[in-house]
Length: 239
Image (cartoon, rainbow, N blue to C red):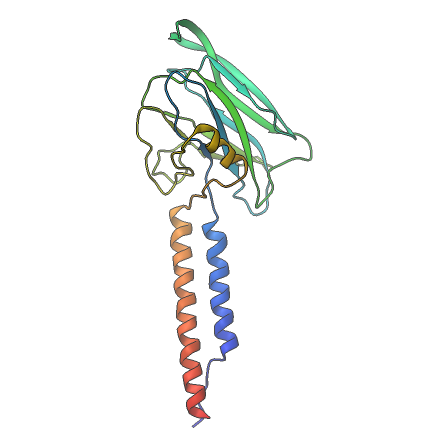
């Protein structure tokens, strides 16, 4: 009787393919802010890290919403090559006192738009820095963001921490929530956190579907390796 043995090369290819599939799935990341903590009353430089999650489209517009109930008296941006920034001011529902000054209006939206021929291409990310202050005495500040692709598709990062599309959050008096969507961890210092984001070393978050598919792919790879070992044993017995 002739035994059909799975060639080692085939089994190895299956394993390699499974691992290759797991890699891109695990690389999916969310829009995050670094550092994600700030001291009340001070000024903080925040870096919004925006990855491109499309395989074919470029990101051409990014918008971050700032609070109107606990507004920042001062908002400024650092120029990003290839992008123009706009600070949009809104009249507040009612005056708010910040650092002894009464505010009747404040910057509530920051919009970055790509110049012609510029975008965040597939496989890339871009960091958008903002200087904000004074930081209000509050628990935490959600900073919802939207990401617009070159075909007009809009990705909204406005959900809660455990949502599929969580909004970046700045924690002031509350402790940061440890969550799989959180793209950053508490930093020893704000400058260190900003430098980490600018150099692209901020952690990538993994959404639940990608994590599940990645685990499945790794499991398939493990099964393929077991089959390869079994094939080797059968080959040796048949010789």
